Image (cartoon, rainbow, N blue to C red; front, side):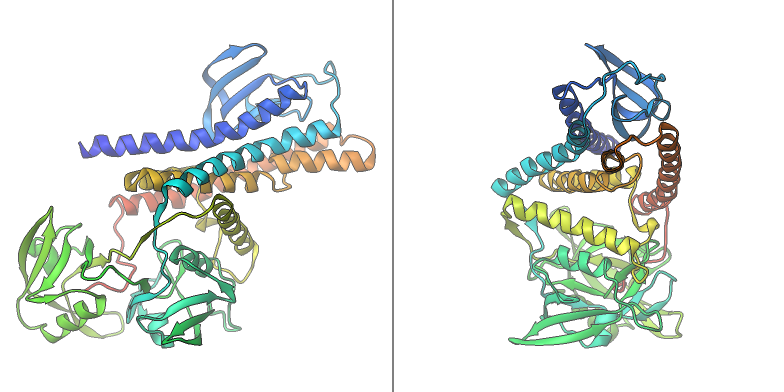
Length: 473
């Protein structure tokens, strides 16, 4: 049943991504037909045709390579050989105006934004559960960086405390934990010695304070991390997220998904409580009370003394955990949502091009990563799935308007150059640029997909790494 459930969520994710691509191409198609252009193919995917149907003068098809889609418009650009179709001669077709080219090229992005707007209106009505707080609930004293080394928690080392409210990151105001994480990960601050750095403004007891924090890079994607978590629901207890092979927690019978309620008779309301109790009672068996499928189960566990890479010996149970963070139902207005999506995309592109950021191509997600993200969102709730779908549509709109050959922005650039110079660009030059960028884009997709596959492997348990977050008691 679990396998069927996973396949069902994957199919939902594939449909969601395919629908985003369909809507984009539908924008081009409708605009082209309204402007009197010839549209001989409407394809989801590139390369050889798998199957489809013909309606009026257009071949609607599903093609072999699932990396996007296209509407073949011979009067706009000759992409026949690249798109897997037959060569089309544009000499027999009537020329189109500059206005026609610009409208048809931009309407794919417009339709994506319209779909994102409709979804945002729905989310505005029903609301979405978000971690709206920016109050720090817990700090890690130690974390594991991307090199597998145990290092001090950056926020703890900088002097931040539980209860501090983060109000600005590098001078930018934030109002949710998601925006905090986005601002942190896409930050471009760096010291002369190469260390990443971030400036935080926090409220502590009504006073505004400034902190300089030096993030560590974690996980295979090497993202910036401060070792902090938002405040949690009172007395919710941490949830076991993973177990370390050969450690006492696994041998005693703890399972992923167990909620830790008590250590002996002491409620576990924070990571600090868990760590301190473990340190004070390291030499005896500790009765861990967990909630499992609605029932309380008591599991006796004898901690094990372990020595880290720095030679520090400490007691460990051997499980990774996370807390149920404080959430609230948020009814963000649609324009706010679209602006937030666009801002995230803008910051990501800026960081990707900035030499001082830690965002690289391997930090991006290709089709595999996007489907994986949609799958996880569909497993959480239909509201989260819709939210992520809206985000993807805004990203598609912005990405496709970049002035690069093959993309819609490239078509608009070519049309504008031809308009300014008074003569069309040589077809040979346009075709060479298109082919060159197709090869480049495919290469980038394959490169990114390698890291996407690794991420999927880790998330599904097929690839096992050392824990990347502190908090392994």
